[in-house]
Length: 289
Ligand SMILES: [Zn+2]
Image (tube, rainbow, N blue to C red):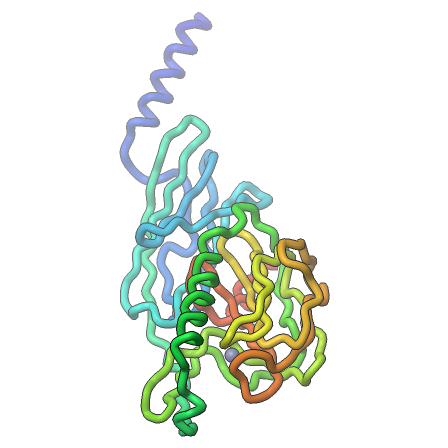
């Protein structure tokens, strides 16, 4: 009897596994509108899940297991992402190895960022060949960082603003210098007099501590799962490269190193390679606490 029962149960499992149909789990949201430079949180819950993966085009979006049995991910939309539909494929597999897929329909909507026309003496804007090579090297060094994020989620709870000053230059601002448009502002500039203490926005690892042509003394923290925060134009460093920092730790002092006209903190966020608004990160994470 026992063997028959087991056989019947196996048949039942087999039948269940072979039924092509709705995944036994749900995604939240099922569809969403996100502004350029915005963040959306995706949550997958229900069913008998052993793991979840998300894909934006060919790029994997890491999901983290949360208390209560659901999986969550933060997805960033670059400030220059083309407006229109973008499909996010979510794959989940059960403990029995049964894969299911769902598509989240994301619509990227245009955000109108401010513009600023500036005239500067041509000499201010001139960059010699040696400097140009240096800039290329530094940009490549930064670009490589976005591919080596810790698979572990290091951050916890809300993010902090690294300094309490207001905004001196907004996210996404497009400067038109002597008539030619430059790349949009990839972060937000916060008012910070020389020597102001700058703190880590969340737990993470110092993956860059270097002095660059444009960004001056620069720190990049890896918070895990493809999420990074950046702190530019510092006067001084208070952390070592590769060290672990806790949320609120002093990491450096505000300054005016690099290509700037006065002291401030440039605060940037990269999420799965996308340049997103740091204030959206504060909101996206804050809402779920
Ligand atoms: Zn800036």
